[in-house]
Amino acid sequence: MGIGKQAKVDWKELEKKYYMRTFEKVRLPVVLVRGKGAYVWDEDGKQYLDFVAGWAVNCLGHAHPVVVKAIGAQAKKLIHTSNQFYTIPQLQLAELLVKNSCLQRVFFANSGLEANEGAVKLARRYGKLKRNGAYEVITATGSFHGRSLAMTAATGQESFHKPYLPLPEGFINVKFNDIEALKKVTTEKTAAVMLELIEAESGVNVHDLEYIKAVRRWCDEKGILLILDEIQTGIGRLGTLFGYQSFGIEPDIMTLAKGLAGGVPIGAVLAKEHCAVFAPGDHGSTFGGNPLACAAGYATLDYIIRHDIPGNAKKTGQYLRDRLLELKGKYHFITEVRGMGLLLAVEFNAELGERVTLDCLRAGLLVNRVKPNAIRLIPPLIIGKKEVDEAIGILDGVFSGINRS
Ligand SMILES: *Cc1c(COP(=O)(O)O)cnc(C)c1O
Image (cartoon, helix red, strand yellow):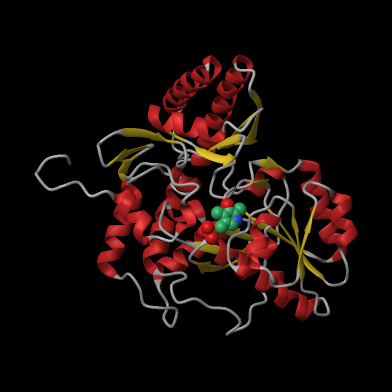
């Protein structure tokens, strides 16, 4: 890199010219070309500590040898065949998920939104077969469930709805963390409640334990399905393999994606036997459950379980939280540190999110501006004290710069 006479390509210009403008607000002015563990490097060779991890995807960090090996070995054998045939990695990963969760059946998709679509379709089949045609799904304000039209409707944020009206019907957004509001909109048309345990994309808003337990009781009482969107909270992020284990309840349906295959695109719908009601032909996917993604998923999940990566996320998350709280004591403009495990946010008393993100970037730390007044920290789950101390050192420097200005 940097050697040779060719003119350097201006990738940012190319993006401006050829790519849709969808990421203009979130893209940071840096071209990343490689990663190793919790670090990434840009095209000029500058190193960054990665506390974004591909939006909570790279749970084992970058270029983890176990994931790299699994992808390479599977690519040499069989990348794709379609679901017209049995393939081994798909079934190995399904078995591993079932044996380590409270759910009994799996369907693989290619992304988070696709997994959620599958979950909602499953709830609608359930409603048709077992609840007199009930089809409505109740979701929470501030939630994020993906960007298809249906998942845009499920997402409880009006700013996501407006550009795409009219949206598919059958979704009701009720007030976050408010059991009475949820009870009030429940009718005989309700098929399911769909929630994130922690609303990650809208700012790491943690549902109260008591609320989640009350929702579970309410669903049981009414015969409604509880779908947990664990796309971000699953796979160890909260300090347990699945988030529901940290909240002490069990979902009827759970969706996974992000961290499941260590960086390779994948999504999964898991369901309890009583509501795994898809009949032959009801649902499908060309790429979903393909051998490459599932081999990466199996290697990732197997490693996570065998090395107690959730335990590390819990311990390191607590340490990171404690150190962030020290910074909160030091800088008056930090108003809150919240989250669980390694899904944390730092909120400010003003719109400092962008400035902090850019200052951190300059200083060699990647963070996510999750709201105008907050940053989100979602590092790889393999980090330890050393990486936390390094990140805190950089944040301290950035905050003291803000304090002085
Ligand atoms: C990221 C995310 C999604 C959407 O996943 P995609 O793979 O981007 O479609 C849905 N729900 C939650 C909770 C997420 O964090």
